[in-house]
Length: 151
Image (cartoon, rainbow, N blue to C red; front, side, top):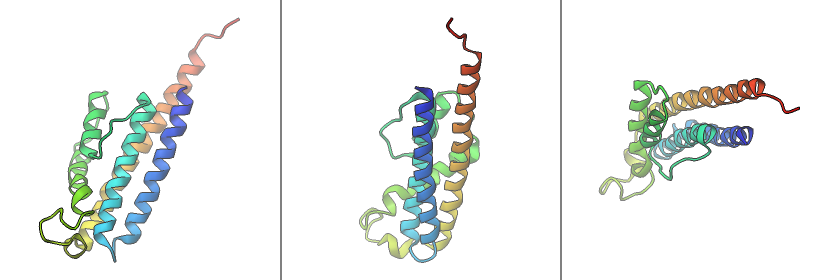
């Protein structure tokens, strides 16, 4: 069962990496869309961590909420990652919907620099998530090795 969770978690992580690739490719010409995909990348990566450790994830799109859930599960979440999550959460709605930021069209007001920063933030979240998922796999392997065998 644990190995299946790790496999599913890695699938979430691969999808997160794809969203990050898309975000970084869009950053120069479509920064609003890039920030959305960066937020999605971080969200998917953290859901992968939760799946690896508990076989479940909350139905939320908030990167900050997902990090708080990990903290509640006993994870050591660096302060920088919490700041990254808060910044990325601003893009979930604001970069997607033309009416999310008043009368301003996100495609016209989100600068390239924001998209580039969002990509860096998502990359840090994915790095943290990758390490956490691999730690879950290593723990599973240790437990399997130490488990008594039946005669």
